[in-house]
Amino acid sequence: MSATTARTIPSVREALRSKKISARELAGEFYARIEKRNPELNAFLALCPERAYAQGDRVDAMIARGEDLPPLAGVPIAVKDVISTRGVPTTCGSRILECYRPAYDATAVLRLEAAGAVILGKTNCDEFAMGSSNENSAYGPVRNPVAPDRVPGGSSGGSAAAVAAGLAVAALGTDTGGSIRQPASLVGVPGMMPTYGRVSRYGLIAFASSLDRIGPFATTVADAATVLGVMAGRDPNDSTSAPIPVPDYAAEIDKPVAGMRIGIAKEYFAEGSDPEVRRHVEAAIERLKSLGCQPVELRMPHTDYAIATYYLVATAEASANLARFDGVRYGLRVDSLDLRDMYKKTRGAGFGAEVKRRIMLGTYALSAGYYDAYYLKAQRVRALIARDFIEAFAKVDCIVTPTSPVPAFRLGERTADPLQMYLADIYTVTGSLAGVPGISVPCGRTSAGLPVGLQIFGPHFGEEKILRLANAFERANEA
Amino acid sequence: MKITREDVVRVAELAHLELSEAEVGLFRGQLDSILEYVEKLNQLDTANVEPMAGGRPAGVADDPSSALRDDVPWPVAPIDHPEALRAAPDAAPPTAAGGPGFFRVPKVIDR
Image (tube, rainbow over all chains, first blue to last red; front, side, top):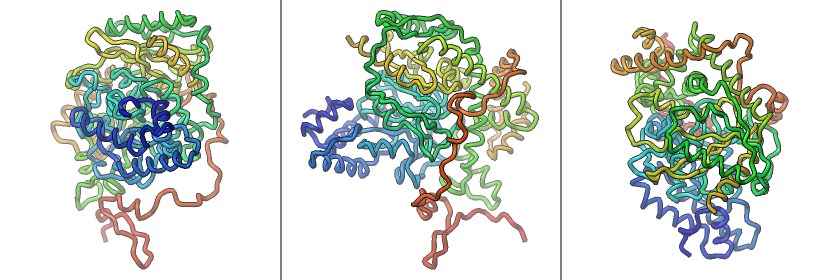
C-alpha cells in the first residue's frame, strides 16, 4: 500500500492487521517523509531509528503470532524534546542540554511504548517550553507547514508541525500556559491539555511544576482520545498525579451531545481578537447549537488578570526548577577555578534570552521583600480565576472560546516585545491556572488560508466531555 | 523606571546568571515594563482569598493520603548509577575496585 494513507490510528491498525505493510516498513516510510520535509520545517531535533525499528519488530512479531494488538500497535509518534527518553538526546531546545541523554524514560513514553507505539524521535520546541512561537529554540525556529513563512505557535511547535505535515500520526506536547492548544490552533490539528494530575509528569523536565501537563496532538479528536487514554492515570512516581479512574475515552466520545450546556463567556470575545478568528468561533458556536447544545451566557470576571498572574507564578516556579542546570550533573559546563563563577558562566552561556528573562523575573518575584507583593498576590488571584471556572461548571458542561486571538503570525513579527508575545496566550492561560482540561479543535480557515482553533474547556477530570463535544464538532464540520 | 541597574545585577547574582552589560540594560527595561503590567493585580482585593498552592484548587482530588507511594524499595534502581554519571560534564567513573564514581567540581574548600 501507499503508507501516505495511514495517517490515523485506525488506518495504521487496519494496514497492519491486513498485512498491507509491516510496522517496521511503516516506520521506514515515516522516516523517509521526515527526511524529505524536515530540512524545511525543522520540526524534529533528533531521530531514534534503532529504538523505533526494534519496537516495530516487536509489533510485527505479535502480528505474526496472531495476538491481539494493543491500542497503539505500530503507531508512529513524535515526542517533544522536554520529555525524557532514555539514551535519546533530550535538549529542551537549549544549548545547556545540547549533549544530554537521559538515564531514564518518562512515564508517558513508557506507557505509549507498552501500548505498542513506535517513538520516531524528538521534536523542536521553545527553550524549556518558554515561548508562543517556537522562535526561542536554540536550534532554530520551526516553520508552519500550512504557511512556511509563519510560526507554528509554541512552545510545542515541532510536535504540532510534525502532525500537521504528516510526519507522525500523533505527537506528545506539553502545555504550561497554552503550549499544546495554541500551536494546535495555528497549524490546524486537534491538541489537548488534560486536567492537572491526569497524566504523570515523571520524566518531564520541569518548567513550572504546578502548571506543566503532557498531552497529545493528533489528526483527529478520536486519536487524541486514544493517546490520552493510554497515558492517563495515577503514577506513584508523580505525587501530583491523581488516583482517579480513567474512563474509556474512545467509548465516551461517540455519545450524543444534544442537551449539553455550553458556556460562552463574553470576556473571551473582547476587542483585540482578529475579526476572522471571532467570526469562525461564532460560526462554530452556531454549529454546536445545531447539534442540540444549549448555549449559556457566563461571566468569568477574573479572565483579564490571567496573563499577569501566569507570568508571576510560572516564572517563579521556573526560577526554582531551572536552578538544577548548574554544570555539575548534566549538560554544559563552562570551566572556572571557582565553583560559584562556574555556575554563573555555565548558565550565562547555556540559557537563551527568554529563559534568562523568566529566571530573572521569577527570582525577583520570589526575592526578599517582594514575595508577598508579587508571588503570593498572584497565587491569590489564581484562586479567584479557578473559582470562576468552578462556578461556571456548576452551570455548564463545557466552555467554548477562541484558542488564540490571532492566526499564525510571521516569523520575527513579535519577537521584539516579550509582553506582546505573552499576550498570545490570553485565552489559554486561564485554564492552565485553574487546572482544568482544554482542547483546541480546528474550526475553519481565514481568507488567507490560516487555521483557526476552537478551544473547549471542561471541568476537572471531565476530559470525556470536551472530547465528546470536540469529536461531534469535528464530524459535523467534515460533513 | 522602577527597576534600577543595581536591582538587575542583584537578581542576576541571586539567580547565578552571568549577564553581559547589554543584557543588563535590556532586561532592566523589559522587566520594568512587565512589572508595570502585573501591577494590575493590585486592582483586586484579595485580603480574604486563600492563595492557591498547587495545580488544582483546594477540594479537587486533594486527598493527601494518595500523594505518597508505599514505603517499599523499588526492585530495580530507577536510574542506573554509571549511566547517570556519564551525563555529567566532569565525573570520575566507577572503579574496578568497586568505587561508585562521583561528580567533580572546582575546589570549594581552602586549607
